[in-house]
Length: 126
Image (cartoon, rainbow, N blue to C red; front, side, top):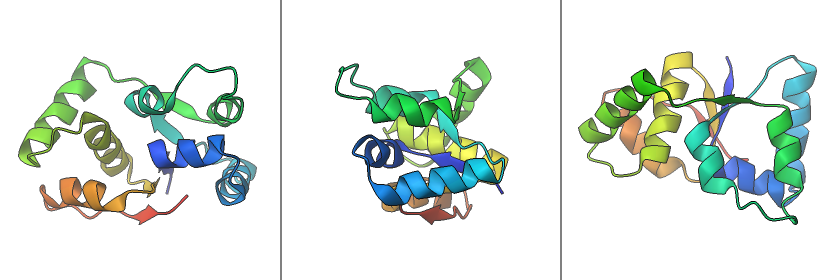
């Protein structure tokens, strides 16, 4: 099983929270490269010189592009879930496709999107 980080995981890492960093190091030690959908990076990125932890985390992740095919799948999923949150839909779409565990600080919205298509999403806190 792989792992997908949502914005809550990135924000926790940027704040230097030990739990997410311990998890991240343990994943990399097991050669599990976490996936971060590109829209999640856009949501968490501020471009500030003070934002030094986030680039460190992302260096050990696979940032998954939102190409045309995935963008359409995400849009369709958001429509079926009656959600306007494309970032959450991108997290759910990718995690379900890869059968990943999602690391998120906001599981309710992600579970609601997954349940709209009869899917179950495994989620853990950062």
